[in-house]
Length: 318
Image (cartoon, helix red, strand yellow):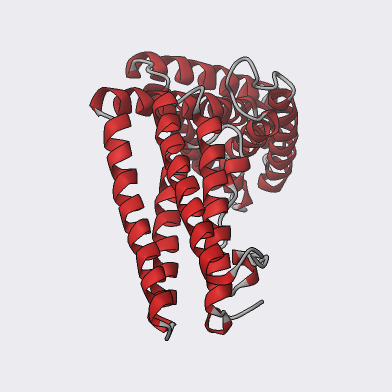
């Protein structure tokens, strides 16, 4: 990799052209990825893409005038010091907050690049050129802010925030909650049945670990294979499956870990406390994200947990 200080004015300007082209294409991907769910933000990024295209055209004209027709191939990953960007534009669906945050950092990074190059050149005409480019980026940043104000006025931004929350619920909360409920509730029966049948903490722990991992794998594959997300908008199936599987395993392991305590009575008491905490968390999530009335959520979750817990105790004492 080249160091920043080793770049000539010609190479620095070629790199600037490459940066503008990359940003233009990223903004285009943002616009396409957001168009269905967030049309106003997509329009904003369309405007920013057009800005970058105009900047690139001006840069090429200036380069041609100063250095001729051939532009050497030099990109940001060929030079030390640039931030490696997470390619979130390749992810579907796009996360709106992540996209906005990355766009802001892109503008700042490019402006700082121009300012740093301008500060080290000794050629007066090149210095003027690079200062003009830095000013273009400042203006672009201001225009990007204006574009956001124009495109995302109060009502539109509120609608997009609601849409963003809806996608979060569909893609993260729903599969995660399904897994957490299954892991926390369905594993109660085998764990406590083993505990009361053997009166041995270690045996209960082994059964709990096996039940949790098995349930996590099963729920993960079931969620991943349920639909591909193309019609439901629920996101990538394997990501949903990963979320569901991990939360299922976590839900089962929570009330299994207390059985690492050798004293059976203490371990069982701790497991009951953890179980009640898990059910309280599930109740809160249903109230917070699924708009379920708190009393109704508590009754539904508590009833299901109590029935499964009683089943385990009865089988264990049979």
